[in-house]
Image 1: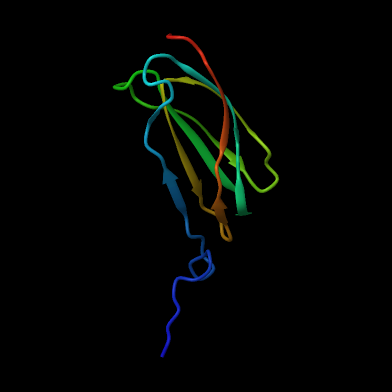
Image 2 (image 1 turned 120 degrees about the vertical axis):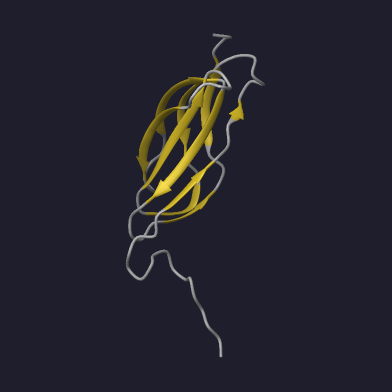
Length: 116
């Protein structure tokens, strides 16, 4: 006998919430600041509405500041963000019925912003 379980993207018609969170990444080896102006999503599969938050720090021991959450779906070409940081992390989440994704490599528009 063969059993198949945990198929599909929902829990028997009820939303199956998720969240993925990265660790802090030093964008300039801790020397200078970076300015983030936009995120460009890349997905081979994207169904439903999802959210992304950007968590930043100006100093390693400082509490994270959160920008967002920003809502996006398959028609979103870019997400405008305004953040200045030394370290950044992202958090992706979804809570709706039918959400599904297969993520590629996101791009970000950044520039070096000096030491303060």
